[in-house]
Image 1: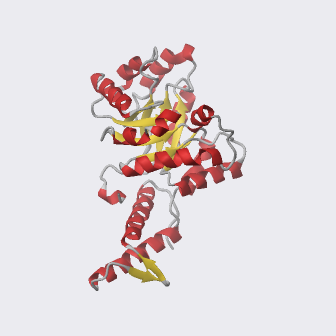
Image 2: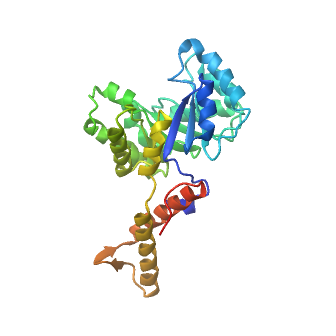
Image 3: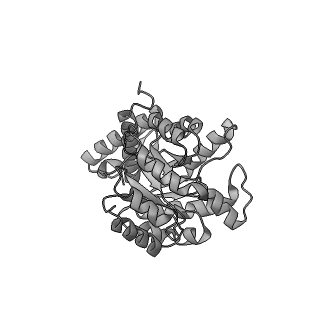
Length: 299
């Protein structure tokens, strides 16, 4: 769906995980160019600090100014000792949504949304981590489970471990499973984010991982350190040449329609109606990025 047809559309090129028990990281994230900030109560917080992290996050989010960034809280599993308390604490905060970890079925997502609503979070959107073989197999029913679901976020490390895959730079062993989830997301008009790249010092590997995510069809990528934001945002932002081509396609299709044709030709290449949809998405994302003061200027 072209983003200008969806009033709730927003760029999610980068989603920065921020450990909720680290106040300095929370405060630092207020000034970062992350499209989405995921305040994490789950995986990055030791069990002994769960309650502390929850209260620290509640206090920090009393000031909900994080610039243009979407504010998401990842809670603990609802069948853990902390999950329901997490929902009770954050459901009525000024945040955009809740990320539920390790969702493995559509029914599980529906039950999580009921729990969120019971805690007072009826107005919150939801995201779902898919990070297990069962989650991948049921990704289509997860994507179809609720209109409240905006985004699937891949948990690639846990998924690779469960699949007994040795992760290589090209992630060859994971590509089939990632593509299955991308297909499910696209079938039900959901955003989908790739899992993070964990080598913080290898710039070339990070850039490759971001470009691979883009070329596979992800809307964005999870990020575990602010240093990765530049590469991630850049890889997933349309460039000037993309926008110029997109505008040429739209112009050519308008001329074709005025002449009673359903296709156009640009530089000896046939342009079908589906490419007009691609062009609309490119222009919309480019415009949205410029609204937040990023991206290159068109010459």
